[in-house]
Image 1 (cartoon, rainbow, N blue to C red):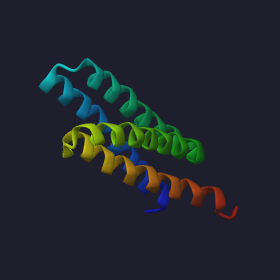
Image 2: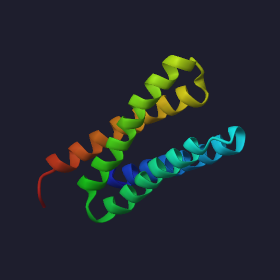
Image 3: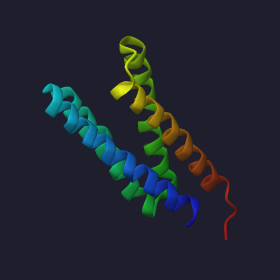
Length: 114
């Protein structure tokens, strides 16, 4: 399994978890903002996963930008609430996914042509 495939799996799972988290936020707190934000961010990641199959550099760039954007949002939210769930969990997950996708994308850009 190469880096690109691992990145696609990570990004796809991250997207599905974001969608599921948005649904859980809606079910638990009736938060439409959570539902829409989770659906949009998760949908972007799932779409970026699909894109990365034909255009890996672009797909991983979109996925890493979504993850790093969510990192910024959830740093602020975690600072306000000091609760690990959900803010801290999404923060940690977003940092890991964002950095991993950036590293994979960088390896793709710097890979020698065959």
